[in-house]
Image (cartoon, rainbow, N blue to C red):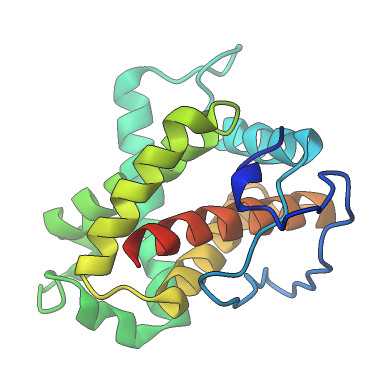
Length: 196
């Protein structure tokens, strides 16, 4: 079974072609929260995991230490929030650090950014073990639902994630972009469904 196959349309084949997603900078499709998602293929999971490994190497010759990983997650988290607020400046009003001076140096923003990147990191590493991943996503979805986070907010974050990854890697191929969009859209659907 593929990624999140319990969220696939009944009767849909895992090998069914993915929905066309056109991207300029990387457009995360806006879909209804209950829209079923096609399960990600093994190749799509590999695209996501291999591109993430390029940014956050946890094995191989470029392996980062735990301290380096934490510092990089914080730095990427700040970049992610810069991108979120660039795409949707009004999103700043959703956060407790909205009135903080020197926003991108704020310990509150840095901690939240690191947490978001940590959640993406956990999701990427658990794509092969959805029995562990889905409960984590459901818990995150319930938490964000209590904070009044809606599908449009997830779309902005998804777009920002894909943009930041693409920027960090000097661009993503169409296949890599589509894989990230598909996986993120599925994650979004799980989280939104859990918050209903």
